[in-house]
Structures are given as structure tokens and as C-alpha cells.
Image 1 (cartoon, rainbow, N blue to C red):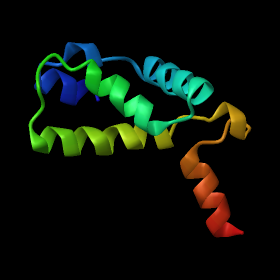
Image 2 (cartoon, rainbow, N blue to C red; image 1 turned 90 degrees about the vertical axis):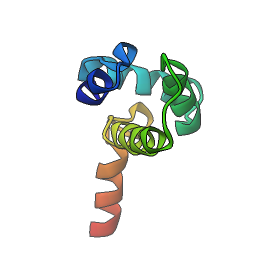
Image 3 (cartoon, rainbow, N blue to C red; image 1 turned 30 degrees about the vertical axis):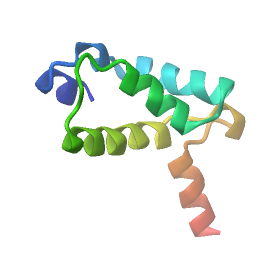
Length: 88
């Protein structure tokens, strides 16, 4: 995200991984909604994104969401949970 944010002049999205994790966990605790998370992040953009930027950002943010440990799921990520489900 930091690389993309720098290349597209969105300094507000250039955050360390720990800050992204905190932001995701905040949304998991309050609304448990990836939609609210996406709205929050898109609201931080300093200019209107192109359609390509929207698609890329949505994919990137979904990846961040799915790889953040979820407190209500014993600290597992959505990707870990999906992998465990496939293996059982």
C-alpha cells in the first residue's frame, strides 16, 4: 500500500503495516464490515481515483483485511480460516 500511495500521491494511505492492522481491527470491533473499512480508506483519498485505481485499491484493501488477525476468531486471519476449512 505504501508504494501505491506514494506513486499516486495519497500520503494519507502510506502507513506502516501495524497501523493498517489497527485500522482493520478497529472496523472488526465496531462494525465487522469490510464495506465500512473500504469506505473509511477511500474517504482518506486526497483526489478522485481512476476506475483502475478503484479496482486496484479494492483488491489491495481486501488483501489487507483478509491477512489481518481477527480478534473474534482466535487471532486467525480470514485466509488462515479459509485454508483450515479447505484442509478439513
